[in-house]
Length: 275
Image (cartoon, one colour):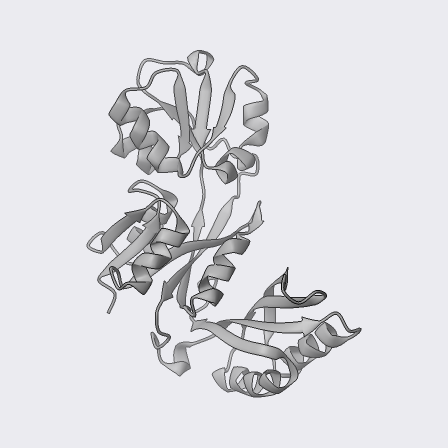
């Protein structure tokens, strides 16, 4: 039973919106300004779960978060996709022409690059969290500075929205995962997606052989991310997401891959949120 969840950011952030959508507004939310501190809160049992962004349809994978799940032996128990709409906001009574700086998370700034290029007078300043910037502007009554954040943050911190939906690609989706210390969230019959990790050398055909096993076992590959093993040159860790109709097919694949691949590990078994 999940009663409390840690998020990266503050209320009004996209992680907070996911907590409301995936659970409901009765869930206790622990605000953290980094993913590391959110994971520490889970490990020390200050919360029951962590919500972590894992990939974005524009910017790609958030690679350090894969490592956090893997290194701390955590388990993905669910996922949620959120349509990310970025908005320019500031204290009331100001126009875009009066804004001298925009503060936001580096990924938000990247995703709004084309809009920001049309306003070259504005200095871009990277910060830790979208909603936390909006909160700071409100708390300190900072004029001449705008935030890029959600509509929820604008409402929560009483900021005027100067421009809506300013991301370059209008369909901008982020996949979030729900992470716990243990992996026994739902019955096997309801599981139709899994995240796994394994290691391979750069030997010719080694990855192709593994992918053929997945195909033969009726698994559909939806995501593959490679990371070099720093301590072992020319070896790579692969983080893979697969979907399937029958959990028995996944169990068969697991038994084969444990033999074929090095350090095979299941990071999570859960429901596919894209169905």
